[in-house]
Each structure stands twice: as C-alpha cells, then as structure tokens.
Length: 446
Ligand code: PA5
View 1: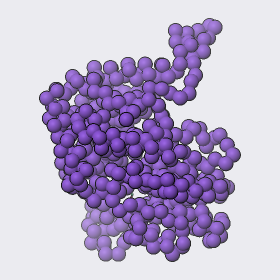
View 2: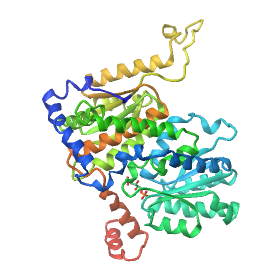
View 3: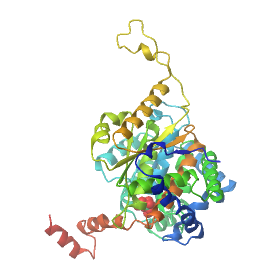
View 4: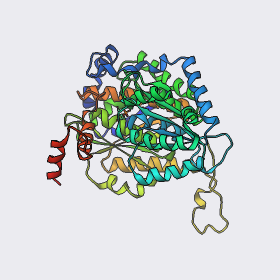
C-alpha cells in the first residue's frame, strides 16, 4: 500500500491521452530494465532493495551509535556534500521542530552541516559555535576524495582534537565512506575512527537509507525504523505493480509527456516550509540523474505561499516552459484557528474561526487553478501527513520515479560525469601537480 496519490487532473489540457499513453506503454519494459539490471548504470541499483535488506541488527547498531554521540553532543556536525548530506538534511528538517535551535530541550542534539560549501565566513562562524558547545561529527564521502568535505574535515579535525585531545576526539568522529577506496578510508583506518560503509552499488544521491542518511537522522532523534518502514511499503508496492497505474510510474509518465511538449522546467512546490530540503534533495536527485547528453528536465523548487510573492509573477506569466509538481499535505498535525477581532480593522473576520491550514489549502487550490489558467500544468502528489513513514515513502517514490524517468529519457540515471568539469579547473587553478597546462590555458581566458 502506498499513501502517495498522484493526481493528473491538472495536466489534462496540456498533454493528450495519446501522449500519456506513449510513455505509459514504456513503463513495463522500463521496470524490467531496472529489476533485471539490464540498463546503463546497472551497477548502481542497490537502492532498489535497500529497504527490504535493512535488518533489525543494522538499525539497532545505528541507533546505539547515535545514542553514544547524542549523549556527549549538544551539536552534531554532518560533514558532506551532495548526496552525502542532502538526504539527511531533508529528512531531519522535515521531521524536526522548525524552531528547534531556539528551544532548548535537555538531551536533544542539534544537527548542523559543513563541507557543503567552501565559505570561509561559514566555517569561522561554525567554529565560533563549536568553541562553546560539546560536539561530535560524521564525515561522509562515498568517494572519500571530494574536496569540500575533505577541506572542512581537516579544519574540524584540528578543532576537535585541540578541544578534547586526540583520544577523546576519536570517540567523537564517525567516518562513512567506501569499504576500501579513497583518502577518507585511509585516514579513518589510520586514526581508528568508528566507520560505516556506503554500499558499492548505491550512488550518493540514492544513499539516504544507508548509514549516510540514517546515522545523522537517528542522531537528530528521528525514528529511523518508521522511515525505513515507509520506504519498504513503496519497495513492495513497486515490486507488485510494475505497470502504468502505479502511482510512482504515473508521476514518471506525466513528467516525460510534459517534457516532450516543451515543458522543460519542473518546479517542486510545497506549502509546508519544513519540506524545503526535501525539494533540495529532490533537485539533486533529478538534476544529476537526468541532466546529461543535452537532455533533461531542469528541476527547481518553491515554497508557497512565500515564493508566490517572488516567483509567482514569472510562473503566472513568464516563459511557458514550466510545469509544477505540488506536494499536497492533506492533514496538518498541528492546529491553530484564526481569532475573531472585535473591531475587525484588518477585515479578516470573514475567516475567523477557521483553521490556518484551511486558508493554506485554499491558497493551494487557488494557485493550482491560476497557474493552470496561465499555462502551467500541475501534477499533484497528495500525501496524508508529514511523518517518518510518509517521508520514507516519498524517498523511495522519488528514487524509483527518477530511475524510470531517466531510462525513459534514454540517459544513465546513475552517473554524473558533468560534475567533474569544475573540479578539474579548480584543482588546476589551485596549483595541483600535473595540471599546469590546464591552469595556463584557463588563466589565459581570464
Ligand atoms: O550523487 C552523487 O553521487 C554525488 O552528488 C555525490 O553525492 C557528491 O558529489 C558527493 O560525493 P562523495 O560522497 O563521494 O563525497
């Protein structure tokens, strides 16, 4: 059973049934390509069965390690970039109190992030925070060679060793990386850090249900069993429904049909700010998986109604190459009603007594209809509520839909060769040995 309902009523005016059928007819063979491991990048399909392979012992180990780290940490630093941090951040922000850093609850550990940028100002301010707090960290890199987390970790390792001494620092550092390759693996072995392995057959952006995501999520106090349970629901559902009526497949089909009608930009929309990083994770997943060989839907995101006051104009009347995918939450878990005012000076008494969520949901309905009228088709993904199980479902839903979409687009959804281009230039310009010619050629262009 899957609790994500894919509603396609608001794309009807933009794609014909025949156009949808064209992609629907590819679903069964595309599922087959995934399950038979016969497509491009098939060495990276470990995520397909990850939820059902996670056993109680593994979950307990992660939880025990998380408890050890929580016990000694007011702050937990996740050092990683791309798929090595976005999944954890997406889940943690979706399921934590939105003002958590300002509400001091004894025993709770706040998660912060490093190694996802190279800003000196960010790092100095992070160290200012860590000077005054007890902390521990996870350094996460599948390749073990990515520059941003490596640089951040070198600085943080220095800091934590000065603060606690080398021996205690070791108990506060966990490394999550490849089982044998990469500089991080060598460093972790040399230093004797507790280490978790990123499976060979799971790429970074598909790794949220490995220790990469699960350890930080558990440190944040989130129920990882429920998260995995949700993902498992969708794994089983896809196993049993490898057809075009599958809710996951419907999303993939709709995206392809819209893309081939010139709707090349997809905006992931939510009316719940806590889902902001789910959209960031989704953007990486889809951007890196589809954007290659001169093809691919450009993934963007907005949080409404906030961004209706910044991006709303463009969406309503700008270039007509957009479609939106709205994550629609049916049942908010918290309740507040709009109070009645004696004088009604703000003229809002007509909505007094109503829940704020009713106004938010009305804004959602009104916006969908306005954008459709403006030429922007809307896919709606309805979820019952935001909970660990539903977020787990969403993770697997989006991963499987991404693989289906990538194969329908005839690209390899599991590589990211384009990410190397900036790195080569950066290494050359920083003076790395062996790249002198490239550096000279680059400098001539400046
Ligand atoms: O999806 C991917 O593989 C990438 O986006 C990686 O997650 C990202 O580049 C970080 O790589 P690594 O975990 O090797 O440091």
